[in-house]
Length: 459
Image 1 (cartoon, rainbow, N blue to C red):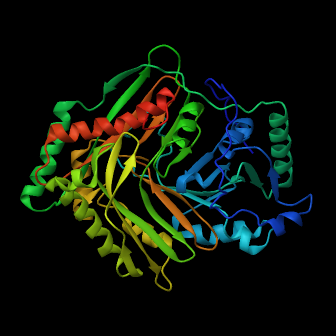
Image 2 (cartoon, rainbow, N blue to C red; image 1 turned 90 degrees about the horizontal axis):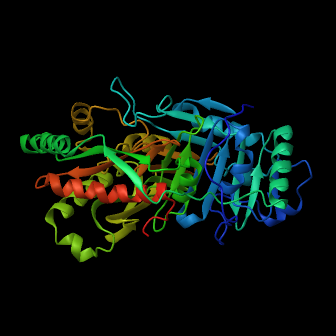
Image 3 (cartoon, rainbow, N blue to C red; image 1 turned 90 degrees about the vertical axis):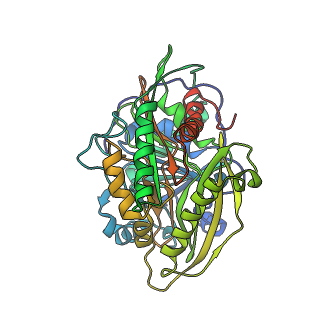
């Protein structure tokens, strides 16, 4: 067990509880809960939110993973690292971890005990230029889980000594009102583009040249923006909390602690979800202002083309792996300060298909890379002078029964007390205009501005 430096940033206001509705990550059934022994590896703690509970115990751990999705129904904090493995070995490692719990198999095998991030690194400098000593692919198992169960928390921990320490701290903090909601405090930000308009125009033009020459159909190029505080230091913990309050989106936040430096993602994009053999994903491409209607999107041939490329690419990739793949109705999905065109996709996994292999095959999708996949990856290595690290990387969790949820870390930033760096991208297709794509990235940056200021997205 390791110790991380003391966290910084203001902690104000009263504790908030998780919304009613229970956790989609399998909670302990009532019948099982009633029969738990005092030494059980799961403990119920009333009146807590898992993310807020972390603030009382995070000094015990050097790694933390925070997740919220499914409209807030699935919300948990994974603390520490009991072991790390390769992506190839994650399935077996998760099953072994589940066996360590004194719980019925139907409960233990559904816990999110395998965590992963598939970062992109190469010989180029890191994109964020801050806190990036560990942005390659990484898979690990946590020492403890705090899982939302309505307005309460279920603590899962196989280590008896650590479990007693966590319970003692959390009960003490709750009884003394020691858990307080982090609150951002920055009304104004000092901004500076790391990639200016001229650089952006060059990148868009290079993408358009590749499309004109016929070896690309679409390319998603990114740019960076740095933020500084105008008077008081930033609060990384407060910003992480705000990302969990994102409205109208599947959201998650992850932190690989390096003192006060944290990576935060609050994303509308699910790469892959598997539950009881059913696979769901979505094509999410084409961006307009927050209140745009479906008619507004379809009036733009450029946006319609961009979305079709992503949707058709997903169907082609999933066809050999999923039975009866069913596209849902085309619709608009709000994502904070912007809206996206979305096509849901659903089907049943074919026998013997490994969800982790599907995830590996899908990434990077045309929504964050381009088409054709390999040509787009090669083009981005030439056009973008930095490796993306955890920007647009898959983050997620795996359970022992094969359930899995992976999201893509767009709307993401690295933040410390002194500085924050964010990335945003835009899909370039034939007919794209650099100034319009610049405006799209500005709208996406608005989401991260809201996080740093301590506002909910969309306000």
